[in-house]
Length: 470
Ligand SMILES: Cc1ncc(COP(=O)(O)O)c(C=O)c1O
Image (cartoon, rainbow, N blue to C red; front, side, top):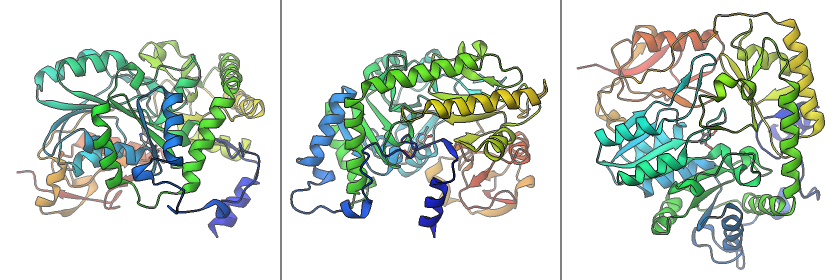
C-alpha cells in the first residue's frame, strides 16, 4: 500500500534535500491525523470560489505577508494558477512572448487558450548547461518586432535559482503595451529575508504565482496567486473556478494558513536559515572537482540575481555526471536530492532544514570530491538550446494526420507531441515544430545520461507521433 510505503520511507533516515519545504517536520507539533479535519463547504466553512469568511481571512493574511493587493489560495499548485492567469490575461489568438525555459503548464496554457507564442531564449551558461537570466534588452527588441504582444511570461527564479531583472522587464512590457506574468513558483520564500532576491509583483509584474510547498513549510499542491493589478482580480477569480477543483481540500487550505502563521511568528528562523546557507557555501569553497554554482563567480556574473537557497552542484568539470552524483548521495550518504541532470544536481533547502542536514550534505560533497578527477569535457557536450522552427501553432495539432515514426528517423517531420526531460519539465519540442537532427542527438545524449524523457503520448524513446512537413 502507498500509505505503508510512505510511512516506512518517513522512518528510513534518508535526509530530504527536496520538496516539500516542510521537510517532513510537523510545524504545528500536534500530530493531528488529516482524516479528522477533512471537510467540505458546509455551513460556516466558506467557499474557495467565493471566499468571504474563514478562507477570505487566509487570503488577507497572504496579502499582508506578501504585501500585495490581492492573493488567491491555490490547491493544485502553481500549475492551476499559471493556467488561470494566462487565460485571464489573454484572448483566444493573442500573441504572447514566452521565455523558452518555462514549465510545461505554461505551454499547456498556450495550447488551451489558442495563443500565438513567440519565444525568447534566456542567456545560457555553457560551462554548466544552465539557463541564466532573460535579457531585458533582447525582450525589448522582440517586443518591438511584435508590437501586438498582449502578455509576456517569464520564469523567475528558475528551478536552478536564477532570477531575471523583473523591474526592467516589467517597465519594458508596460511601455510596449503588454502585461507581465511571472512564474515565481520557486520563490515563495523571497519576502522573508533581505538576502533573497526581490519578489516579482513588488518589482512590477502584473501577476505572479508562488508554490508554498516548494520552499516553505506547507503541504504539496499549496500555492498562491498574487497581484497588485486590481483590474485583473475578477478575471483571475473567474478562471480559477475553471481550472481548480470545485472540492478544494480543507486540509490544504488550512496548511496554507498554518504556513503563513508560522512565517509571521518565526521571522528569526529565516535569519538562522540564511546563516546556515552562508556557512554551507563558505565550507564548500574548497571543493576541487565539484562546484557549487553560488560559489562560481563566472556563473553568478551571468545572472541578474540568484536565490542561494537552491544548492546547485555542478559536476561539469569532474569525471561523473549529475545523475551519478545523485546516485552516490542516495546510496552511500542517505541524501535524496531534488533533481539531477547531465551536469548538475539540485538540492532544495528551506527554513525547515537542520544544521545536521546541511552538515551531512557538506561532508558528503567534500568526501566525494576527493574521490573524483577533473574532466574538461562536459557531459552534456551539446550546445543546448535551439528553438525549433515552427510549422503551425500547438492548438492546431489535431488538424494534422498523426503518423507513428521511429524517433531516430523523424528528422524533418513536424512533431505532434511535446517532448520534455523530467525534471525539469521544460519542453524540448512543442507540437507544430520541426524535428532536427540536432534535437535527436541532444535527446540521445540525455538518454545516455539516464535522464527520463517523456512525451505526450508516451511513445518515446522509440517513436514519435509526427505529421508530414509540407
Ligand atoms: C518553474 C516551475 N513552474 C511551475 C511549476 C508547477 O508548480 P506546482 O508543482 O506547484 O504546480 C513547477 C513545478 O515543478 C516549476 O518548476
